[in-house]
Length: 472
Image 1: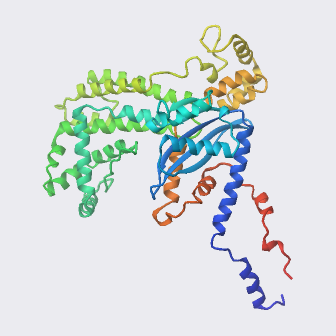
Image 2 (image 1 turned 30 degrees about the vertical axis):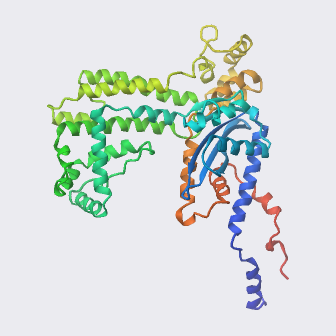
Image 3 (image 1 turned 45 degrees about the vertical axis):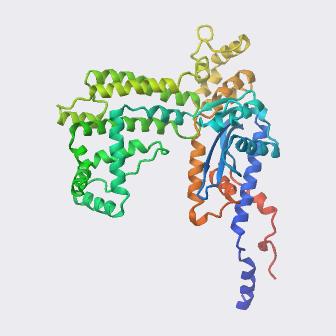
């Protein structure tokens, strides 16, 4: 085009990015997303929170908070903020971090209708716990001890004989995997024996799916494990020739696999109290039935155990299984003592609940409104097409007070799944090789986790670009 090569080199030099250009762009996008989110929350008449704390690869204590709020015609979920706690995850530090964020950004605690957290002492302390301090500022809010934690606490119940099986399993795994040579030799043995897997899995108390996965894997590789332990002259080997031990291992694999299925079903976005309690209650009702069937020596609901008993009919563990299932049922009743759905089933289906016959926990005025909603053909046509939150937001246009009562029930989080997922993102983002990623961590998380897209056009309009200049 008649221009010398040096001309274009000079222009190209001006377009090179600076060392922190990407960091600044992420910060710009995160700031825009945050401003959009804060604007939405301020306009929402209510919101709920879920919070959890953990540490990153540098042992810095982090507080992660997610929010559920109303926007347009639905309930939305998003990361509110990720804050670093200077001295540790104490109740004072956690609450101060949250309260400072609310004050700086003009958020009103009075609009908080729900808080979900674990049952740690720093969260639930009677006098100075985080939840107590939040409820003092947000009298309408209700605390939810998140369901995954409760399910895990209930599942820890085991008799001494099953504890022994678990201990032997953990010792076996540690013997094989804690030594690099043993681990390689075991993998080679599994390949030679054409096993489906070549590695055992480590057991971890903090990973709640761990027990089921660990037990199932070692059960599947029990023959390979026995061969390896025998070669190494380990005293653990004799357990894997004991038919009763193998039967107990099969049962634990089965029951913890079922508990894992329950755990996974409780995870996910947009979970409400009705969905979660339906799952928990279904599992609770199965436990007495399974206990009764086990007492009658009918164990077909546990496929691995059933197969072992068919090949080893002399093994008798039905009584132990029945007893464990009864204990498990008692623990579930202990950790799930109340049914928050009582008096609120009209929220799930306002068209089948008759307030004249059922306890709907409503004033006479709201009962009348519920009757009007239940006979409205327009609402009935929309009910099956929308999720519960969206449906009641539509109803709020005509019956705001009734809809507000419904949304108060639907709004609180039931798990801290979003926080757990967020900390997984932290672990992926802030690694040992990127341990200095500190100041920009929250911005990176917001861009990664928020469903709100940044307004790139607005961001670019505030910046001067070389591309805006006319090259002469």
